[in-house]
View 1 (cartoon, rainbow over the protein chains, first blue to last red):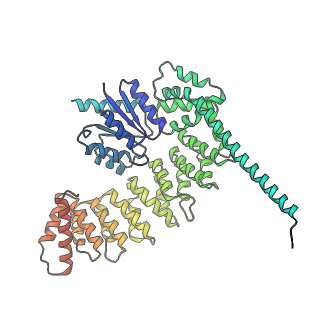
View 2: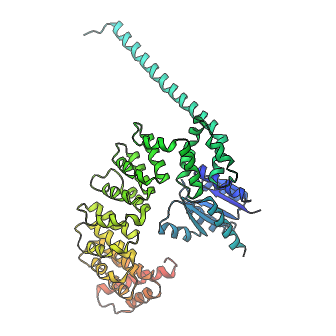
View 3: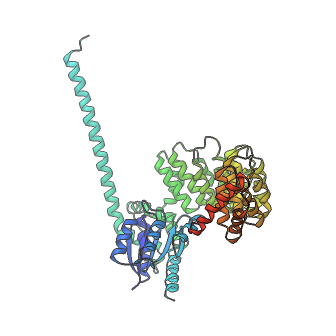
Length: 124
Length: 360
């Protein structure tokens, strides 16, 4: 079964995304911050991680860099979920190694489609 | 004068009574708040999954929606903060469903009234909800909150106006950027960027404002929005505005456009008589234009007496790929027969070393 890690400090968004992904048939782990995410990754390596960019402490972009820097997690697909839509923020996300970018406000249905598309591309 | 002992004891007694009363009041109000929070959390726990189901667009029979529609006032009040929080972060049918719940329970109508509530938290929550709902017709009411006596309410109102994406809001947000602005420029700028191209006409008008703060904000945002229609006005400001920050903002905007027709004002802004801050911005902007003419201007600046300008010109050239690197090689191979050429060679060498190290 495909495992997805959802990292967001906003409990409502984290639980909503996790709920939607679970409904779509994914196994979902959750974390509220960067440290929790790294601990979750150590317990179970996800196939894909959805990271909120703006979090207290380690940002989603820092977390993405950290995943990419570790050979064990370098191939985890990363989708950034953020309210920051400026061109430079998008560039910073891709420069850190993100595979895709969804801007808040977002549609949960569209988010799941983007997850499915990313995973399908990776399988090819 | 000797104070009778009885008076001293009476004063101690009154003070003690007041202290105990005050402590009891504080403890009681905290206990009450805690109890209220626990009750709300207890009410929320079974309802939150229903809200998430509605928000996730995975409620095919609309069973969860109907249950939430039929909640009593106390249960609904416990759910409002979560519903309002999700509202601003979602779009499409998720958002519509939550908005319909807020309407059905009268929360939207209450928020309209709460914009004038005595308590600041209610004013702020109301502004946030109206912003998330995107009710453009309420822009004039939110604009009034930009002058609210409470700083946090002003900030929420500015952000809410950005969420409305209403052209009507843009003039008010720009006006709030004037002298003794009660709202940080970054917050106003972010709100105007959210309004996006609908704000361009007001921002363009603001380039002629007598207040340099408004001109500066407008120049910066027009650049970020890629408003090419304002390019000619921005070129004029880059050359002539009396305020340095306006000139810098205009130069940065032209750099973002990256159009070769504005090379002249940018090269002028990089001129040696200008302040360093403007010249550095112009060098950065010239690298955005990136034509052979821009490269030539940057090459001529590598030996600049202002080391920061020279370094920035060299690093900008290095970032421009083969065209810029060829210009740096030419600078390196020139005869070092004066101080300027020696400085240029040192800067070029440093920038090329940076490229070799994978720094750019």
